[in-house]
Image (cartoon, rainbow, N blue to C red; front, side, top):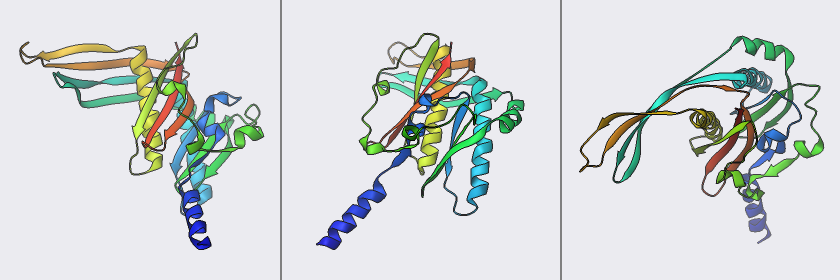
Length: 241
């Protein structure tokens, strides 16, 4: 019986998901700019993987300084609802900032488990982390944040939430949610709807494009949350108006 209890305890511990607090509450970090990069956990050459994550984090910091989002999505509306028929978007930013950030930013902290490698990149002077920000949080113990259903408001900022269902890996799910958060910011700031085809009123069908062409400045990832039961990943992002 003791063996069974121990086995159950070990299985529960293996299933529990822990994250550093700075990953879940990135907006609480004392420095700007900063970036968090999520990658697959390396099986070998950990140092190389961390360095690659650092370079990718500097690329994120460069993109979030100012990025132009251009593209669109086609929808088909029927009496049954609205259906997406595909999307195409591009992101353009000043890539020369990547090298600049690689020389001015440092690796502040790293987290690694069997599934993922998370690297925090920021200014080494102003981004000193206290014990609370370095502590680990069980995602199962985090209640649903209010921003999942109601966006926060702050003067001078747009907010948006990006979501992703659980894909093949946890890493790809977090990455997709972050991409969707940036796209949601772009759609929040400026969206143009163009009807490209309309059928008869009897059929009640309409085909239209949702077009986006906007530059986002000072994009920040504020918070992350994972619904462990429904397997949905949420990211709250904001940008200056």
